[in-house]
Length: 352
View 1 (tube, rainbow, N blue to C red):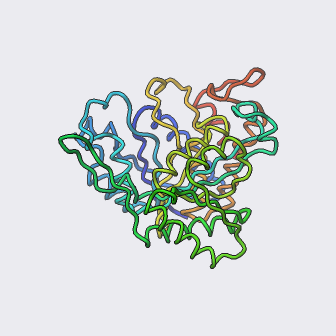
View 2 (tube, one colour; view 1 turned 90 degrees about the vertical axis):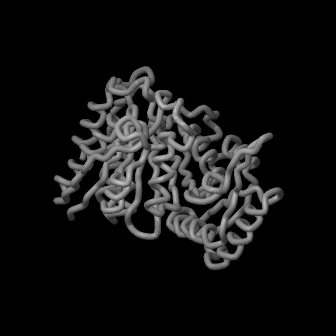
View 3 (cartoon, rainbow, N blue to C red; view 1 turned 135 degrees about the vertical axis):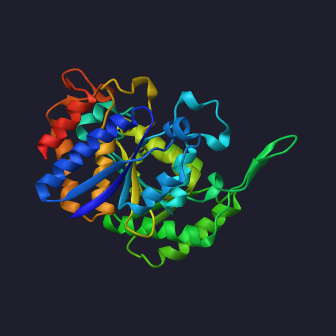
């Protein structure tokens, strides 16, 4: 199999972690006879520095022409002074919209080797955590009408029925492949858009009678994630609510340096990225944790290229390296072996 991958390394530690994910991809390709042609493109702060804008037409066109996109991280204090419509983060919104990626998958998986890093009591997470947050990505308040007036400002949260239907169906299909439990999170006691959201979920639920469905208001859901996270299997929710809840879920697992994400559309092409930020304070110092980006590459193999065996190989290699006690500084504990970004990538590639 030959696949063309657009690499958008971005800013800060983005290039550091992307390099290790590419290393692991090539190890998998060598083992199974696949060729992954990886080409670098600029987006985010580095694009502002070079071209004056966070996302160029050239980069978007290249991503559209690729089989999938692997992204590092964008942004940093260096660009805090730029106008709001030219912020590095606009590159992410532009790529998601331009690639028609409406579904964001954020797994929150606790590795047993890192259980002590969880901020919750052991009895709360004694059996571990495995949650999949399915977040709507191209609608809602982040893309609604906004503006300022002489006395204030406004942002509009708007959803079309079709936008809700397609993300909710994704949630149900994923739940069918897991433990057949789906929690829909909204604010239907207050928001008209959430009332529509809930009605769509209840209608589509009739098509999936095997899936147990419940509804939670977003404030209660955020509380339940801390109180009893094991009650969740799949969470499906809107753009802003998913943004917040997936970050909360990730922190419960112990380190955002471990967690990948996938952004998907109707076709096979997706954009894959770690959920962590650009961490410019440690960029280029060989200390960043590349595992989230490596696992994002595994998600790319699974969801875009249908290479399940290869994806599992990467995940097992990560598990093996953790079993052997190797840790980057963010997950280091007494008794483990501290390694840098490059060595962690080398170890995972070697286990493959």
